[in-house]
Image (cartoon, rainbow, N blue to C red; front, side, top):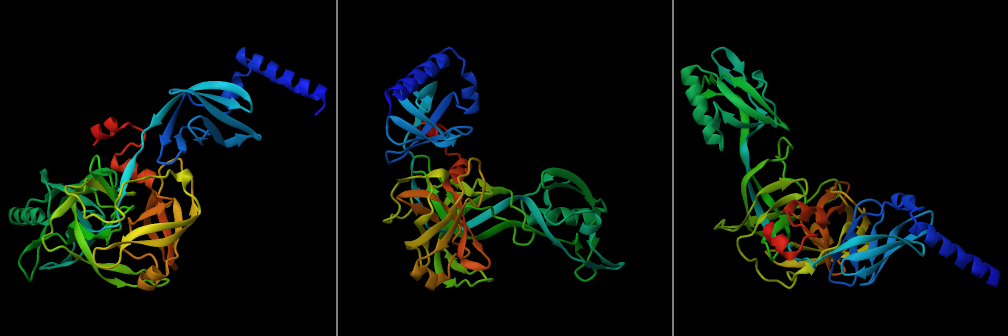
Amino acid sequence: MRRSDFFRKVTGMILLGFLLSLGFFQPIKEYFHIPQEITLFNSESSTLASSIPASANLDVTDQNIAAASATKDQVQMTGKKTGDTEMTVSVGNVPVKKVDVKVSPDLKLVPGGQSVGVQLSSKGVMVVGFHLIKTQQGEKSPGEKAGIQVGDIITKINGNQIESMSDVKKYVRQSGESGEPLKLTVKRHDKVVKKELQPVKDKQSQKYRIGIYIRDSAAGIGTLTFYDPKSGKYGALGHVISDMDTKEPIVADDGKIVKSEITAIDKGEDGQPGEKIAQIKSDGKAIGNITKNTPFGIYGELNQELKKSQFNKPMPIALPKEVKEGPAKILTVIDGNKIQAFDVKVVNSISQKFPATKGMVIKITDPKLLDKTGGIVQGMSGSPIIQDGKIIGAVTHVFVNDSTQGYGVHIEWMLKEAGIDIYKDDQGRKEAS
């Protein structure tokens, strides 16, 4: 480089720094959306991944230097820690802004993989269908006539809370004998509607009926994804539990998870997903409660320690942008209650900034698992996905036309639903539990 070019470059840098210090380049701060505070997530490795709004996603590659993952017009932003609570963000070689730094402590979760039986009770009773009643005046369905819809949840009758199907039978009998119509409070999606329904007498049984099929609980099996050894909180399944007939999400009122054993596998094929066949432990004793049924799975707290295995040692998590395409493993049970690790491949991962399901596409590559199950099967939902010694998410869905592939959800969104704030200190995490 010629001496004149060198001095011109140095002079330009000095002038730019001087003008910046006078505030002439304030718009640069706006252009790059540099926040006032950066929260750095401290994992087991030396990498600190930030969780910050807008586009300046900084990745700290060691304790002192942060390199921006996002650039604009080929100009890279960097950050240098100038203290325990402060970082200077630069554009190119020019310091632009000092920001506050808050480093979150190491969060480690115990990966799951256990097969669990799920028993969920809804708030009220869900309408899952209609039927005709043979009366002296012909066939009738009072429920349809009253404007009840499949998927409606009957929460109250005559102002009284409904908790089970037996509650409904009692009020139907009283209404039929008195001739007074039932006054129903119904939850329909996000709305509450009022309906009146007059029971009719079945000509054959001589009992009063309302012509609707109802359900007050659901049961099935799934896989535990993780639990937090400090708070006892867990997450499982990775997707919502819906009613098998209406396909509507079940609004959880009470529920529990229990131990289960896999007794057989119905092998999946393209166009026909398989399933795990399980037996619930005879004592039916709950190992945890269910407090939430969300698009990202079921959540609650464990009330007992799970059986020790070589896989259930606490390990760190990976945020969505840390997940890489390539080899990974899933933990799941395909025989009895033995957790095993199987090879998979992360085909695609979306670096999601906001909670969303189906953040990953995974493919089963393990010959043993393919031979046993054909790929992803029902009951495998919630199986934790491990990559580079970190929990990155859970298996959620299988592709109907390719049973070797399916979707996964990022672990960050499951933790959010579980009420585990990865950006709070240990004390805050305990207080939130």
